[in-house]
View 1 (tube, rainbow, N blue to C red):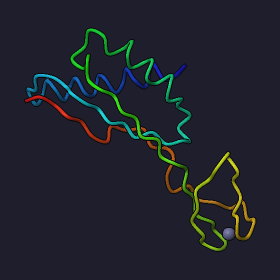
View 2 (view 1 turned 45 degrees about the vertical axis):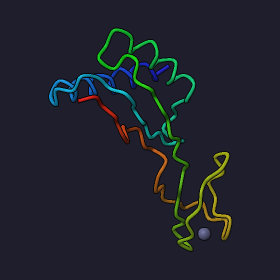
View 3 (view 1 turned 90 degrees about the horizontal axis):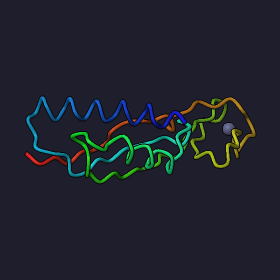
Length: 114
Ligand SMILES: [Zn+2]
């Protein structure tokens, strides 16, 4: 389960921010997770509950936004969303694809109490 190390890293990052900005606490954290990042949403939520305990982040509401895998075909420049890991172009069947999104793993928004 690499979700634990991911969450730990995010919490450290948020705690640093809180200390630097002198905020009282975090109310809400919104994460953006690409479907290709290999992160399982349930596992991440579980890891968050465990890791946030006793930290400055404890009690903040976590919301996770999954970002679909978007690719562009190198042959016909068609852009499409990949479903079920089917990596071939629906228009020309090419498998030469550039990934445009889907690797995200970041904090998109954060609500803090000043
Ligand atoms: Zn194509």
